[in-house]
Length: 207
Image 1 (cartoon, rainbow, N blue to C red):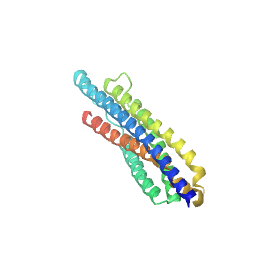
Image 2: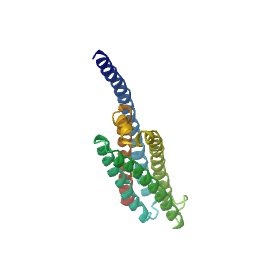
Image 3: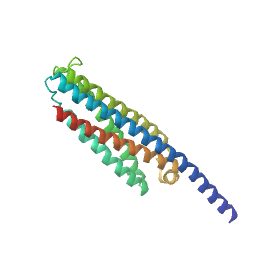
Image 4: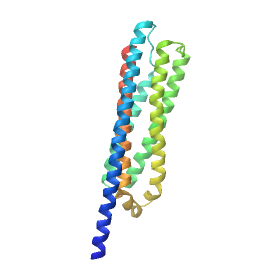
């Protein structure tokens, strides 16, 4: 009995340390999101005033950019489902959801590159004032998406051995580190989705 109480106390102490550690990570993430938001707002405002000053023909966005928006929104919805599966210990659905998020992220990146090529082939080169801003702003966003995907690959590689069967998945679903990492990733991924919708709206407005 005493041994069980000691183990329980040690578990609570361990969980408290992890929660405190990832609470600091969360604040760091919030500060990073604030900085990234200010950067994108600044770039779009600069784009707006530069477009007025140069008075070049507006850029016609490729249709792929709209499809990419749906892809990113779909990945955010899948992430919400994955968190639901995590809380309900549905490890098969959880694994499938995480892999689908990664697949949709790759599809988004391929779509962005294809969209840039379509823009370039339409005559909107980097020498074109408005399109150069579009390339830079959407490119910076894509770099952040790529960074989030690198973390997701790391997260999946670490999670895969524990999700092979139900017995080992019990340990996985009670790990406070996994829970915290999933929460931090979801915050950043949803932020990237909202940011892209803002950017797309801005591109449409100037177009």
